[in-house]
Length: 73
Image 1 (cartoon, rainbow, N blue to C red):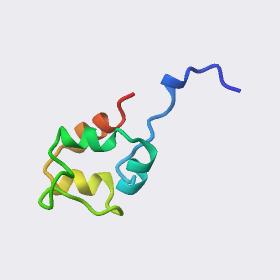
Image 2 (cartoon, helix red, strand yellow; image 1 turned 30 degrees about the horizontal axis):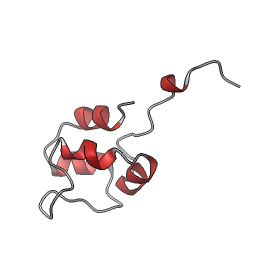
Image 3 (spheres, one colour; image 1 turned 135 degrees about the horizontal axis):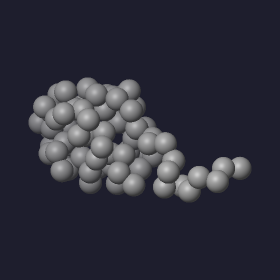
């Protein structure tokens, strides 16, 4: 048993996390992606097996900013 509050838990997403896993783990991921205009249309879409790093690169979004948004509490 840990004395650490749940809010102090490790961030779940890394550059290698697949998008399908991110979406399955957190229902807020699509909303957070919309901040960066990712996933709303065929031009900014992604494949389920794409990693967060690939999606960031494909869409010209700094990886650290995208990870920070996806890992928000």
